[in-house]
Structure formats: structure tokens, C-alpha cells
Image 1 (cartoon, protein in one colour):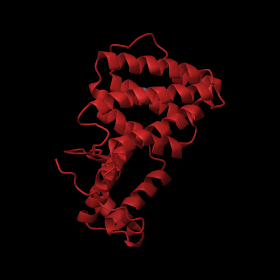
Image 2 (cartoon, helix red, strand yellow):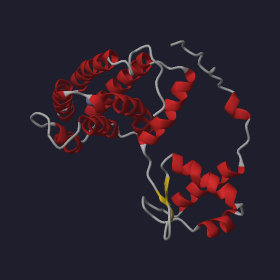
Image 3 (cartoon, protein in one colour):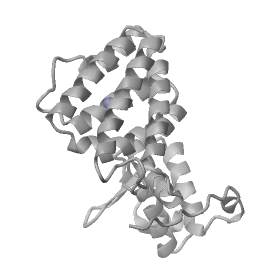
Image 4 (cartoon, helix red, strand yellow):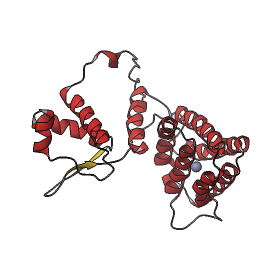
Length: 250
Ligand SMILES: [Zn+2]
């Protein structure tokens, strides 16, 4: 298969394009959600009311809602009694968007794996440095278990442990941005893990959880390096996630 040239990175292209009406309205809706203190699941005004509030056409309003829906910030319930409700800040949605950028730019899985490993090592160290031992214990305890739990899929376990480490950094900018790598890796990789890989993931996670819980940053780094190497080694052996392949849009 002939490889296609990636689309060029252009750091200035986005600076000059003015926002479209729908993008402006989307920002106003987000601001209103924050100003009104609405939480996940809260109902937003009906379409007719929002057209009045924002003084826009149905078309522009729907485009604005669609922009927010793609990011997971709102959920649009179809049918009678439906309408837009507040969604969540989902690192998986952020990862989905990032994977599109990676694909367009021709990012390879090896580049993703290196970025993921760097991010995870940093997150593991910062998590172990979290000053509140009780909080570390609370978030790490679910992963300090003997052997794989039958009811937990490796994909869920993998996403959960790495998300818990990111949460322990105490920095939401890091928590959201650094997780995009683990989200993509988890989505592409761990879902098809066999029994051996499954056991490896659970054992690694239990050890990592112990190091973070005990407050050992250097050990947490080292264990995470090893964990990432083992996961990557398995992913590289598969044809769809081989190192020289281009990352697929989730
Ligand atoms: Zn893991």
C-alpha cells in the first residue's frame, strides 16, 4: 500500500479565520451553562427559546449545538420531550479530535507510543507526589487487587487506572491534555488483549497503584516505563497498530 503524504502543519492558518455565527453562538451557550451553574444532565432551553435568546436562525443554532454535541459538552435527546441537555467534559472526545489531527498530519503509532509513554511517566510521578495520602489511597485502592477481576474488561481497567493517575496530578490542564494519548492507545490497543496481556495489565496496574499509594515517585516512574513498554510491544505486533502505520481517527 502506497503511503499518502501527510497534510502540512501550519501554525498560522487558524489565527486569521474569523469565527462563524454558529461558533460564536456555541461559545455563548457554553458561557450560559457556566454562568447558570448547570451540571451534567441539566436541561437547556428549547430550540425556539434559544433562537430568541441568541437572535439566530434555526440553522445557525443547530450548527452551534452540533459543534458542542461532537465535543460531548451537550447531549441532544431526540423525539418528543427531548432537546439539548448538558453533557460532560470527556477526555475521550478530546482524544477523538486529537486522533483526527494525528491522522491528517501523518502521525505514526510509534510517535503516539513515545508521546504516550512520556506523558504517563510524568503523570505517574506527579500522582505519587500528591500530598494527600488518603486521597492517593482512595483512588489507587480499586487497582490493588489479586489477579484480573472477571467483571472488569482490560479496556475499562486500563482507562480507569490511567485516568485516576491523571486526576491525582491535581492539575486539570494536565489531566485533560495528557490523557488524550492514553485514550487513543487504550481505544486501539487494549480492547483486543488476550488472557496473557490481560494478566500483564492487571499485574502492572496493581504494582503501579502500590507505588503511587505509598508515595514513591521514582518507583512509579520506573514501573510506568516498564508498563508502557510491555503494552507498546504487544501493540506493535499487530498489523493495525504497527509502529510505522498512521494513527487512525477514532
Ligand atoms: Zn495501563
